[in-house]
Length: 181
Picture 1: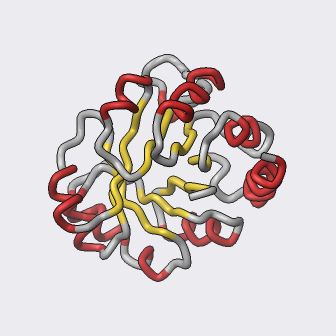
Picture 2: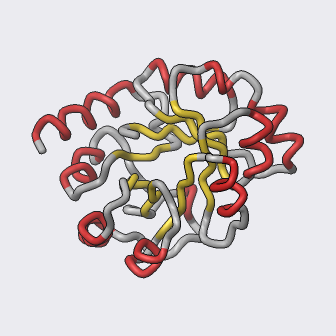
């Protein structure tokens, strides 16, 4: 779970895996049929495959897991199907209450993809969540190769990115941060 690439298409997913992504998360805000259509081919990538917000699509695509936000339903169905279950959290209270296999914590910093989210956690908020839970915490929000190591230093098990998904420098930065930890 070192580098979680959040992508909307197979071509970008391929580029992200080539750049070192260990997880590809298909994030398409659309009806299940469209998510399934756009997710074809992801299963063949040499990375853990997660679908965002849609348990039915994850099952139809043979995904390894599903990532659900605070308001999303489907955790019970994901558990029943044996899917890896990720949950988004933006507070310590949410992190402590989450039924999940891993947490996506953020946004750590301001980012265009999370304009409607809670205020940024910052590194101290991320550190607090990482120290309080036993689950792997994936930092998300405003992360790139220049600041990913700070998230790993704060205790994160990995980082999730959108804009930096195809940057090979991101994986190098994460690997170096783990080596130094």
